Amino acid sequence: MVSSTATPPRSMAEEADFLQIKAFDHVHFWVGNAKHAMYYWWKGFGFKPVAYSGLETGNRRFASYVLESGKIRFVVSAPYSPTDEMAAHHLLHGDGVKVLALEVDDVEKAYRETTSRGGVGAWSPREEADEYGVLRTAAIRTYGEVLHVFVDRADYRGPFAPTYKPLDLPADSIGLAAIDHVVGNVQLGKMNHWVNFYHQVMGFRQLIHFDDQDISTEYSALMSKVMQNGSGRIKFPINEPAEGKRKSQIEEYLDYYLTPGVQHIAMATGDILRTVRELKARGIEFLRVPDAYYDMLPERLQGVNVKEDMAQIRELGILVDHDDEGYLLQIFSRPIQDRPTSFIEVIERHGSRGFGKGNFKALFEALEQEQARRGNL
Image (cartoon, helix red, strand yellow):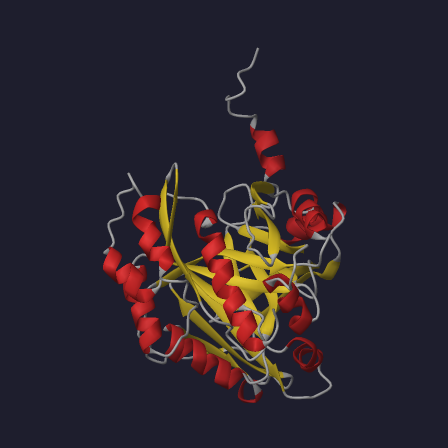
């Protein structure tokens, strides 16, 4: 008899993670003004602008900037024509994430495997070439209007993609190092549909499930399931609203984004105290939980060796949670555009692989305070 803890045969392991995703390649925002969005990420979040595409580079369709911080790559693009697909996207959603791009070794295989399992193609494998080499991509559709683009850069040495020229603008990094996870909001009753999509089409596995008893207040609730790929590098929590007395944050998002979409991007840092202090100095606004949260925190953290200074944690409004494997620190921004839709999470992990379950109630109450201020609770 084979032990249940034995390593599966190689063929089974490969089948379980047939995409072999290496990392997030980039997150592409379609926005109303690319130059303004570039400046926001550059000066607000410490991203370094590294590439530009536009009229001056032969791109007659849109202006686009590529920014990097650690292993994170953001792209912000805005159309020149009001009849462009990008303009229609912005009219409907406001600024929002269009592409979650994933680095793979074999674009053709990734496209073939996902579409054969029920994925809907947005474009089949294609090559774009310039003096820097050949860039290979393909794309499938996921929730709302979001695309997963598979990217192979093995034979491409350019700054990002054809028509992009390098930029060398000075930037002061504040320590944002990698994408920890990306959260999608979907309609009531659709969470399991998209959980099954990630399982069946992309070979992901469910990591954690939170129900409306975990994430709720007196007034509203949501449910969430976290999907991750075989290596654990890519995590996609999927949220849906739950029945409540009043409108939840997920319903508010759907009211203003008008379709499912990316709710927030969590970015990891190795020094959250420094990162958040610098973000606040640059004008980035964060949610603030009630002070009672910090009065109860020492009791919640009994036996947990949190190395960060608790006075600074309280001053900055950072949340702390722990599990059997360690602890984490996290904080959530206010919406990063005029509509109350997408926002940013900053997270620092010390062993914990969780998502802050112990903070849900306090965070939800803070979110409801913001919704009440907007007249949307």
